[in-house]
Image 1 (cartoon, each protein chain N blue to C red):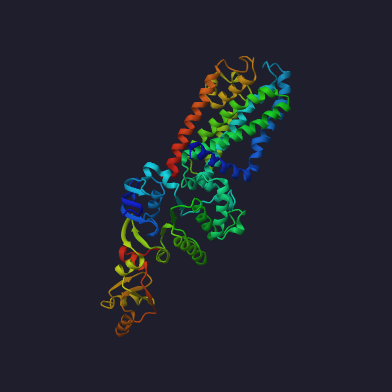
Image 2: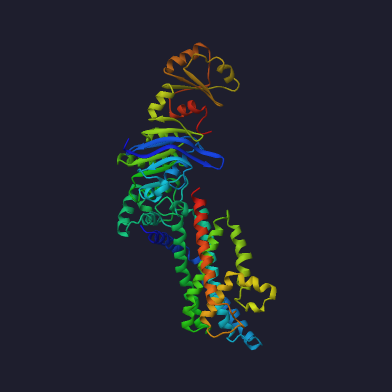
Length: 308
Length: 262
């Protein structure tokens, strides 16, 4: 366990009476992409802020690179790159100036910063926007610039708090591609997200957080195998027909979830389940068969959906 | 990286940003003081000097020294208010900065370093203009700059701390309307405190701008007597302003830390 870059034991964050992070343990290894998955308010951002040393720890132990943030937060911040949830690019500065000042904050020499800016703008596909103002950039460009800014000091650990929230699908995929490249280059990433597909795509390992606690931990496929049967049959019913159908589902699947708009049947054999549905005379307006995802894991663990 | 290097790095980013926003500060920093000097000093001053006011110096010299300190106060207060609110609320660059090796103290010190540089420049311009108006000669005009800078920085520090306790920009306008403007008018800039009704004089003595104005006058207008300055020794003014600066810095760092590192 000597390779742990980040280690938390009994980590707790309270704001007054409210407990945002409740006695969590986790360890993040060098070179892995580690995810914190959970709905808004699960305590992901509070956990990130403690790791990045911008929020004091209430209780428990945390080390980053073996350093306690309470003792030397600055030494930690020298070696990390932070992409906050909310874009905080400096709108008074140009694209390249935003990178430049963070280089200076990291005490880099001007002569070293400029080539680094070229590299990062290339990586973020923003070379043409080098001297433009930040405001007119699209949401995806701003996020890529924020990521580039986080990389200026060539960090040993990159922390991304909901990197793709609010982006359109195309911008998300472009961003994932960039993050994937970082991963391949051996970077250690911490990613918080409430998107299942994001966690499945990017994370080697993740923890599921809910109401300040970690409710499950493992690799994405492992969690799905552990907590959700292989396939899901989703049924949508016409108005008024759902309640009758629900009474008649016993034994059709290893587990079922009744949501406001649909019914989910978890099964190892979707064909078999569909045949049984037919045999029982249950006719849904729409039937969709899909593989289980982390969303299903979350639903199973908490009884709630991630995004409502 | 030393604390000084960190503060200078932050100041550098403020300089880069200022290259784009300086136009908005030209009127308050340069034009208004000149208008006051022209209207009150030369215009009103000729009436004052012709009347029975016995200041011992031309009114233009009296008001130029007062405006030097008042100008520093206004620029200092401006520096401690809107840019600070922007840093935590609108531009939010303070929140980003503390994810780097810089911390809240580096931000506060960096802003003060930058504020001092800006004050020196603004006051130098004012001093040269005052010399051009014939209000002061060059030597005294230049030695008036350090005490005026101290005055301005004391305001920057205290108002930075106060601004960091505010949640929106409206209270900043209130500060200027009900704080800075009355100070500007009644702290001895335009007339000696001795002209105020007796019960108001102790209040005027307690205000920071009074100490700034007095300090500038005592340093530049050597030989003037109690008709225009008090008998208070200079060190009291210096200590007052230094204590104000120190308290302002201490509170600013504390409050900023609490605010952006919850």
